[in-house]
Structure formats: C-alpha cells, structure tokens
Image 1 (cartoon, rainbow, N blue to C red):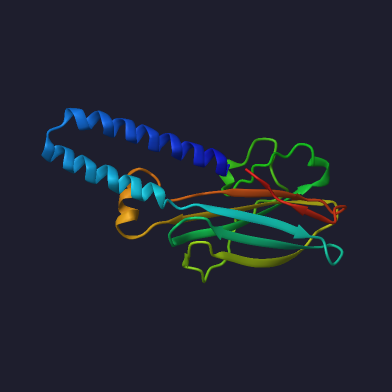
Image 2: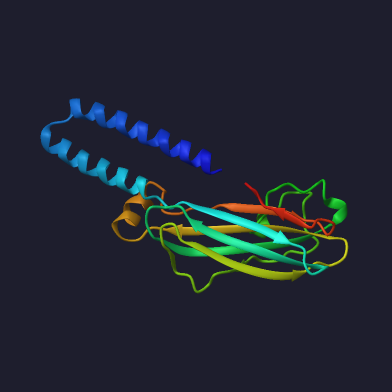
Length: 199
C-alpha cells in the first residue's frame, strides 16, 4: 500500500513539474511569479504530506486470550495531528474462515455481502490522549481480549490524521490532508503467533 501511495505521489510531482515548465513559456512575468508561489506551496505540502505505518500483531497467551500489539509509526517529515485511531474487532464463526476477505468494515453499511459477522460492533477509539504524533515517533498500545470457542476475530486498525496551519489549508485543497490505512488479521485459536496483513 505504501509503495502504491509513494508511486502515485511521484507521478503527481512529475505532472506538476511538466505543467510548470509549460507555463514558464506561456505566462508573463507577474503571472509566472504567482504560479511559482502556488507550485512551490504545493510541492512543499506534498513533501510533508502525512504518512504512517500501522503495525498490528498478536500473541495467544494465556490460553483462550489474545494480546493485540498495536503500533502507529509516523513516517512523515512533520508532526501530524491525530483525528482518530480506531480499532475494529468483529467475530466470525470458524466455519467462515475461507470466506472472509482481508477487508475489515468500520461502518455497518460497508459490510461485504456474505461476510456478515456474528454481531456488529462499532469500532473503538484508541490512544485517545494522543493529539499529535511527531516525525519518526511510534505510539504503542496493548489490548487483551478473551477468544470465545470456535470464533475467529477479524481485526482492523485505522488512522486519520491531518496537517495544521498553512500546510493543512493547502493540502486540504488537493486532498493530501488526511490518511487512512487499514491493517487486518485473522486470529485463529490454533495459532500461536501471527503478524498482520496490510490492505
């Protein structure tokens, strides 16, 4: 997912530079100065766009309990303001293990037909006291849950963050003001340890 995002951002920068070079030859000097300022602001905002890595792993210890290890790592060059970090845990029958995709719905209306959980649970907010995450900073939390018999826990992690100040205003115009990533795992009672799949 991160590679796709990085590739998309590289393509956007190349397109911006091509348009900029074309405008240099077409615009008079005052308009050119204005265009340079706008493109400079966009480039700076793009360089400092929010980016995070979500790590979600688990251990089945003690028996019948699962310990979720949750980590949010800010890969951005600037501090980002957290809007929310949500954890979603849905229960499925073990008989559905081969029918469930990696997608974890965070809204009831986004459940994939045929992948309905045993019961719907709204996602919970975690790291509530965290308002911002500094460049390179990692936030870590652990949660312990009891696993009912013959149940698979389908877990998702989602973050939404934004930039503040002039960067946030400019990036909002071009939709770089927020990020959402979802990490999913299947927790099987017979497993001893697993690491998340990222979607």
